[in-house]
Image 1 (cartoon, rainbow, N blue to C red):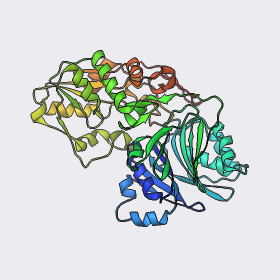
Image 2 (cartoon, rainbow, N blue to C red):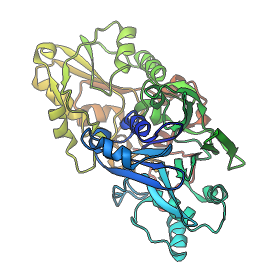
Image 3 (spheres, helix red, strand yellow):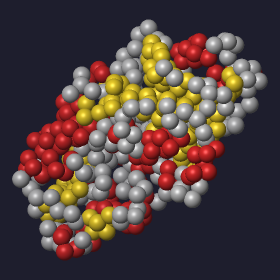
Image 4 (cartoon, one colour):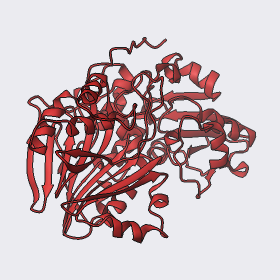
Length: 467
């Protein structure tokens, strides 16, 4: 999962791109970058860390002067595991650069490709030299770079049907910014308009800071071309697009102030909490969100059950990193003790119900429960606002191995008692999630919940049914 951004403006673009990707920081915290064109040349700046670190106050003006132009794209990085889960993908910071018939272009990608080795081999045979052997994004760059077509859009249009997996793209070429969405619309991409600009972004929340208005979403299987005249072209690159939008965007990734797939993310979370309150009520003295993932959910859950919310977990306000987005080498349980501090005065001798958006590997929640018990909580109950995640994701979320998923081998009661060690633990039902989304089941990607995916599985991936 990553954040992508693109803009065509009558004003300097670099500053606007940085503001745009800052509003997409929640989609990736491992790196960020921008690429800006003056219509002839492309200049870039990218690296590891948060947007505020890469474009820090000391260096910002120099970067903006170097990256001069009115056309540009940006990216925030959330690196995933390769299709087999055996090799961690190196952090190749985007946008990635390529050349098409001697002219530079830049590309930013949100999603994940599968079964791309034949495409990589083809590009190598045509003379392309890969900088990273594990980057699926560079495969797209290599195919464009080695295309025999004379026109860039024609080359792109011929390449897209050959890509398997999930992808939303922003591409910078000369004085054009191009947005692309895969045929299933698994990853979000939307279009906005400001007083002096047209914008592409993963989420509509990126428009507000720039004073732009949300126009519409890029359709599944659509190409949008922005240029000096604004929206210059919109057309489908595939004849049979569908919508199979990722449910986990609603659950976790998207920001509450975004609207995606026609639904307010805020109201999805509110409705799902109301549904879980009906499905799995609790007897407790307080509802307590795990900051920040339990927010919004806890308000609606509390309201329905008439149980007050208490802030018994204090979050260090200077610790901004989202635990799920940290690298795999991170000790996430220890991280919680740095990030969260339970308040004894609030939880001692109390029945506490903590709320979490999801439970994936169960390497964080047990530590939270343990900390509350250490401070004297009489009971600790857990409510999860996502159905059990039992299957891997190969479409852009770092869930590549079924072995690591706690719900793949244990049932709800076993997870609650043996792993989390809570007095009770309940998930929302899959049917409840679908109802909260307001969308038909067939218009959602539910692969990590059901093992049924909108695209063909990688050939070497044998899924086992959960225990």
